[in-house]
Length: 263
Image (cartoon, rainbow, N blue to C red; front, side, top):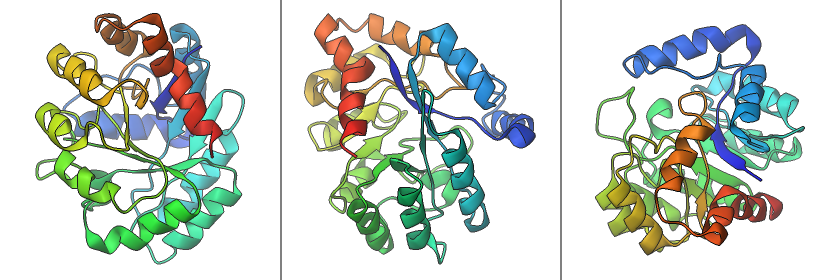
C-alpha cells in the first residue's frame, strides 16, 4: 500500500500552460507528467501508488471557486482532493465552509504563491476557522525555486503558526525544503506532520536521518510533489535511510490513513 500525500494536477484545458509556467518559474524544472488527472493516474500506476492527495492552490481570490469545484470533481477513485482559499479574500471563510460541504478533507496554502507569511497574526482568524471545520492544512514549507527570499514558511515562522491551529498541519518537503537545521531546531518534536515530497536529490541524507531520529516516524507522510518528482524517486531516498519494515509502512500509508480517516 502506498499513499502519496503531495501531488498536483490541473484541468485539462489549462494543464499545459500551467506546467510550462511553473517550469519556467523554477528555472526549467522538468515535469514527469503532463499535469492532467490522466497523467497523474498514469504516474500512480507506474509508481505503485494506491491513493494520491491532490493539492490545489488558489493564487488569487477569483480562482477560489473554480479551484475548489475542480477539486471536488476529481475527488474519489484513488484521488483525495484538498481545496484552497486565498487567505486575504473577503469570502475566504465562506469558501472554507463550502470546501467542507463539498466533502474535501483539507486545504493547501502556499505562502509564496499567495503572498503571505504564515506567522502573520492577521491570519489567526483564518487558522481558527480551518480548525473549527476540522480540515487538514498543508503548507508549502521552506524555500521555493520560483521565488526570491524572504520565504513565507521558514521553520521559525511555521513554529509560531502551529500554536494557532487546533486541527492537523502538514509542513511539506520534510518540514521545509532547504531548511534542515531550522526544521531540527524549531519543528521536530512539535505536533506537526512532514511529508517527504521533493526530497530526492534535495534533502541531504544527514538531515533526513536526523529529522527521522528527532521527530519520529509517526508524523511522516510519503509524498512526491508530482509532477516534479516521481514515486520511484522518493521511495529511493527512503530506501537508504535504514528504516524497518514497520517504520516504512507507517510512512508509506499508515500515518496517512490515520490522518485522512480522522476527518
